[in-house]
Amino acid sequence: MSNSTEVPLRNRAALVGRLALARGYTAWHAWGRRDPLMALFTPAGRRQRYRLYERLRAEGPVVRSSAGMASVVSHPLADGLLRSRDVSVRVGQQNPAEQILDLSLLELDPPDHTRLRALVAPAFTARRMREQEDRISAAVDALADDLAGQLAQGPVDLMAAFAKPLPVIMITALLGIPDAEVDSLNRYGDAIGRALDGVASLRHQREITEAKVELAALFERLIALRRREPGTDVISQLVQAEDGDQLTHAELIALAQLLLLAGFETTVNLLGNGVSALMDRPDLWKRLADDPDLAERAVDETLRFDPPVQLTGRTPTRDLTVDGVDFAQGQGLVILLAAANRDPEVFERPGEFDLDRPNLRDHLAFSTGIHHCVGRPLAEMEGRLALAALARRAPNLRRAAAETLGDGVVINGRATLPVRA
Image 1 (cartoon, rainbow, N blue to C red):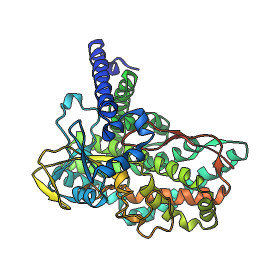
Image 2 (tube, helix red, strand yellow; image 1 turned 30 degrees about the vertical axis):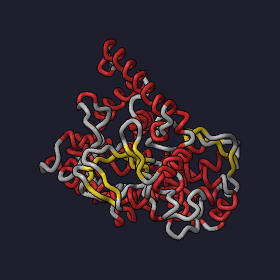
Image 3 (spheres, rainbow, N blue to C red; image 1 turned 180 degrees about the horizontal axis):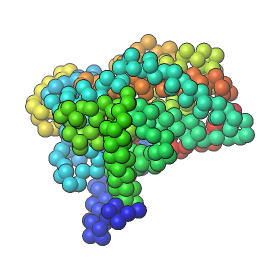
Image 4 (cartoon, one colour; image 1 turned 60 degrees about the horizontal axis):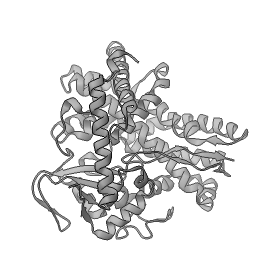
């Protein structure tokens, strides 16, 4: 690691102190004050997140935490807040010098959000996705064939062999990242993806810093290349927008990093969570193997039942009432998307994984309103094609050993998923 990525000794000591205080503060509220929202931010709580959501639901659609925030578990209320123009994505005040990540669109309100989203959205239209389908199918089939060959030799970790490589192949193709750069992206994406929950340790801080430096350098090289040799990829489009004064250079770098992170994290965990749920229900896996057209419904039910993104933060910019509930200006809100997706007032038998659910597309896994995930069409297509290919090539797929869960609060997925044929 270069010296530029090292954390000075004084800063390391300060970081260790802040981490210890934060953990103590969280643990006190979680277990000392029995706060289910704060319990989500502890390792033990993350392993029982869906039980904690139901504890919160039993207390009401909006529950104020002992730490000052308020959690939202109601689907209609979450939907209304996410759609409201009087609710900001900015939560609290953060010193820019201490900001871990620049999440670009995710942390901007109009008009900046509107301007930048308009530059990215054309890459994810239905027409563009139809144009990409043959390439995605080819990548899926190649990975599925490799996986089938590995399964013939013994147990395989589905995450490493299938779920992680696919979205990296696709998002790098979409962004125009050369093949020679692909191997390093998994490491950088993992470090930055875990940073959505904050810095976990000194080692994690070093990994984040190194990843940010290396990714910025990668995109600088790519921007210079696309300025000389423009293509049809997203980076080429953004370079043209920068040259036309539609965005700044810093905004271009931040957008590129966000698209890489979002394209990776969502699809990896969609695939892992979906296969895990289906293997727990062999009758449904057999139905999918017999009728791969069910893959589209399997993707939607996975997104409802066990979504990759579990929560998001919001702050009302004025006093307002949504779905009969009053919210004060400046109130910090944690909108629990995964809990809203299991609201029994909207979904019958919400704790069941049901491919025949009539309203399974009513989930909020991709948020909604102006911050509705711009990459949703790509994630859904990748998920649909991948689940169908897996079911065709491995109709008898079963667990080979216990899975390992990821340790994220915001991002929910499997670290490992051992399978056998």
